[in-house]
Amino acid sequence: MKRTVSSTVSLSPCPSVVVTMFAAWTGRADRSIADAIPENVPELAKYLKGDETFTDIQGHWAENVIKTLAENGKVSGVGDGKFNPDGTVTRAEFLKMALGTVGIADVPYRSGECLDVTASDWYGGCVQSALDKGLIPENMIGNYAAKITDGKVIYSGFFDGDKPIKREEMAYMVYMLYQYSCDEEESYNILTPVDLQFDDVSQISQWALDGVRYAYTNGLISGMDDDTFRPQQTATRAQAASIISRLLDKTE
Image 1 (tube, helix red, strand yellow):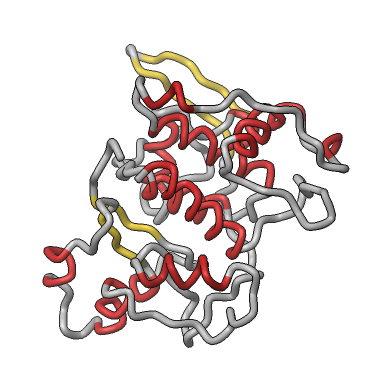
Image 2 (image 1 turned 180 degrees about the horizontal axis):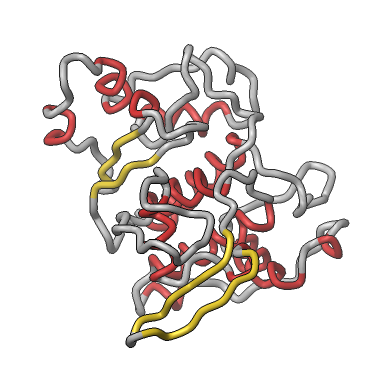
């Protein structure tokens, strides 16, 4: 992998420190972070060590993926020993996870660039980092606009970070991140997209179609058992975990 930096990644429905994961995307736990955990935060130490187990994933189609990610400190649960695999994932939560997967760190949020994001929002730094690198599709920012002021590109619009992310949005975003993570030599390994054969391909938004095609062709996403993709359906935590696993396999 090209970028080996420590990142904060969470599959939690809120930015609580107890359910936030630290991971060094070098394939092992970052001991310097683990050693610095205060004694009064034992739950955080448990997650860092990959000791978290879940009582609600037995028999789930994503059970093995979730277990492997948890054992390696890549995802966390929602508390009380649960992962809530069929729960929804917000745009901000998936963005945070995906950026950490390819080693992109947060940067200080510049007030006003997304009208519904503030510097105090837990995801403000990752939104800013993604904006700076062009990793948020324009169609995912309501009333999107970009202008140059004093030599800097200033964005405006609404990110709706607390809105559940759609499957087509997740697919498009994960392909953009995969493409970003590839260096010039590895970019030649990105496969040319094939035509999608899903029964509901017509329901994929036009702006997202190429991203879905690339993501599917390169093994980053898959369809449903009934030969559909369900692009407008909100993504689940299990589906997000599966995509994070595939992205890790591609970029490690």
